[in-house]
Amino acid sequence: MSDIRQRMIIKVFRKFSNSLGPDTLQFIEQILDTHEIEDTDVESSLETLAKEYNKQDDATMKVSVDVLKRVYESLQDQGERTQVEKEVIDPENHLFFIDAFEMPRWTWSQERSTFEKSPAPSTSSGSPESRVTSFRDRLLIIKQCVLRNEHFAPSTLPSRDREKLVTLKSTKQLLGRFGERFLLLGMLAYNKEGKLCLEDADGFVELDFSTLDEPGDGLFSEGCFALVEGEYTEEATLEIIAIGQPPCEPRLTARSIYGHIDFLGKGATSLLEDAQFQARICEEIPELHFFFLSDVWLDHPQTLPGIQKMFDNCIENDFIPKVIVMCGNFTSKSIAHGDGRDVQRYQENFDALADLIAAYPLITRSTHFVFIPGPLDITVNSSLPRRPLLSTLTGRLKSKVPKAHFATNPCRIKFFDQEVVVFREDLMARMLRNVVGVKPDVKSEDLKRYLVQSILDQSHLSPLTINIQPVLSDYDHTLRLYPLPTALVLADRYDSYKVTYTGCHVFNPGSFIGKSLSFSTYTPAEVNSEECTLLVDEED
Image 1 (cartoon, rainbow, N blue to C red):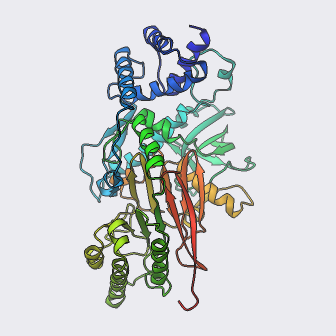
Image 2: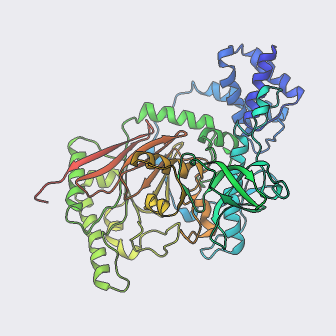
Image 3: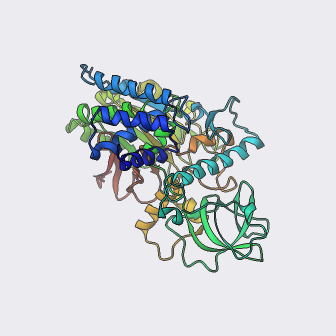
């Protein structure tokens, strides 16, 4: 076999942090020769083999021939079974609504360089150790993605590119090395003197922004992790030359490495099964849709007529959604604590919504309704993740709508191979209030893109310190966005938008009530969303 193919084999497996011995390399060469794979298809074939190998529980960084043979035989068997007659898929059997407080807790193990399931039960009170663990996990998960990035991962082959390789350093390596340039990864935070620092697992260094022309793309807020390049000075500060967001890792890459880990608690699937599911969704249920509404103010006079108009349009056009997600706030103003009259009206509004939904039997029988609380809604806790709406307020909805689901905030929807994360928070305003760096003269469209980039690059729904946004430390993993979801719904009072970043489709349906009635539809077959508007009737 040619040296070109050998280099291709090594390159593909290195991409997944694997190394190859002579016997393993020879076995892979035999596979390529046996199947007479064309040069144009070699890379994709090798990637399939590498991804399935890394999904095995006993997979090691140095590829084992025995494990690789088992994977190869399994792939052959699956190829033979593709000709078997398929049963018609039932979406109901592959649709799950995942409560944040029921998700298994996986923490990062530095010793094994992988995720481990936490044996300790999670509690709402948490502990000092879990608070430290949550931030350490955020740092280490981002760091292992950075080190796998092509700009940081050293090549196993000699090449000129090695000279361009960027090496990450730690804050402890700065000591005594004045005048040298360093690249650090750490969290932006203020010290006791109110000065901005970069903090990593080994310590912190004060930052000097005076030499920085402008930061990279994204919103740099207190509590987010950043890659900072600068020169260490005799004043023990780092004069910043450049600052940027850590690179985001695509869902396929993460799934190829950690596909055997059941992050959601609903069973792990292989990448091959994922691809087969997606193909069947496109083929058999291309018209299936999810609806997403935010700021469904039940105390507003236009809300219930607007929902009724949406239902009428669905019936008239035979366009019944599989799922309708209604995000709070379900009230346009905060309910005063202890004001029984406001609470009673709040409950009566939910009762009126239940009567309205029940008036459409076809929708009631066919559609799942998911209710996610907003910042002003009545729940047990105000920290993230937030528990569902109080059951005492939603009794009629439960009795009249058999497929009603009262979800946590955030909530995750698993549909076949897809993971859709729904988060109701005024995130844009909160991030901008606590921003420490952003490019000057940023327009609204740039802000939307920067917000999406920052959230996905940080692999976390709330990349802020706990004094800004309190988080239950034992459940911090429920805010994690690693591996990246298929779609992310950032339900926000900010203007609606949709952006696809690193393969993840992100959209904001915007407030339901406004100059028009606005909501978003999501099509799993296309992994895409569309904004929908209904005109407001003046008599309403």
